Amino acid sequence: MQVPPFSLSEQIHELGAALDQAVLEVLRSGQYIGGATIARFEDDFARACGVPHAIGCNSGTDALILALRGLGIGPGDEVITASFSFFATAEAISAVGATPVFVDVEESSYLIDLDQLEAAINPATKALLPVHLFGRPVDMERVCAIAERHGLRVIEDCAQATGASWAGRPVGSWGDAGCFSFFPTKNLGAAGDGGAVTCRDAGLAQTIRELAVHGMPRRYLHTALGYNSRLDSIQAAVLNVKLPHLPRWVERRGAIARHYCEHLAALGGVALPEAGPAGHSWNQFVLRVPRCPGARACEGASAACVPSSDSASFGLPEACCRDWLKQQLQDAGVSTIIYYPIPIHRQPAYAALGYGPGSLPITERLCTEVLSLPIFPELTDAQQQRVMAVLRSVVGEPALVGP
Image (cartoon, rainbow, N blue to C red; front, side, top):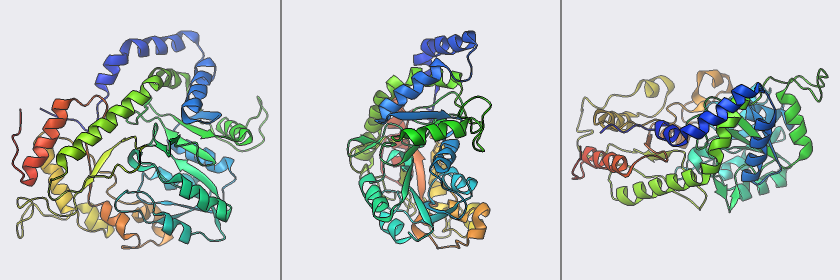
């Protein structure tokens, strides 16, 4: 049995007729940019996020850029964020002319360390950009309290957390703006790129709408230098079909994650992710391999223990144990994904910021330890049992590995 890390085929099969009809209606309408299909999605998505405004855009990256621009963040400003994230989190800050300031994360949650975040605030700081990584929400009550004390803006990176909530309130409704991605592998995925910004303030919503269409408050009047960043009608049509299923999909992801945690709790050599308070949407199930799992992995000078190229090239701790486990699972038909092998602050693009090896020690160590197991709503019980059986077998715990 081959188990992929993610698959859309089952979802497409289930929703195929509805998706076909929705897309065909858009094609036949001739309304490919703007119109009722977009308006419907924005209204429904705003309602799902508990805010009055949602603005569709080209991607999650553009959502971040538009939110930062809309809030007046630019040259000379600093924005504090996490380095343990996808590159776009920081790239968007740089794209508006501001400077990303990276602080470390907590080992147990993978989320930005809020004590270090507050300690990093200085007169140049204009905004905080917490990342709800892998679907686990940051403590937004604390973030907002910190922001209020220091007079700062808050932009939530919700790219991996659609459907997540903190204290019963959806992510994207806490900060000044929430930024979402509808990349196909997300909890709510389009048939290509897509994104949205959510907010409570009507003025900010209007500014972002204008920036997304070349800075136009009305046709051929340009009051700012904006972007061409519109969510197209076909993507909106796909999202309109999928959005009502989001709560069910998030619930199923949670059930898969709980099953992993319950049945792998005694496994040696790996550290399972914490669920944290209620509200995790489990876009990924990311465990850690802090040491070689089982005697098979690293006996003396085992040939299996070869430092990865990323570790050697970027001054990171050795990732041989994690990489060894990934290869063993792959050889047994279980595909996994590494998020993220090189932290943002150690990327060549940010070399000028001067973050050397060891500057964010927990982030740098996590990048060599993390491994994401297969998780998606249509993952079958048999597939999950196979993943767990192979994992037990590889790390040395006796288990019957099925076909």
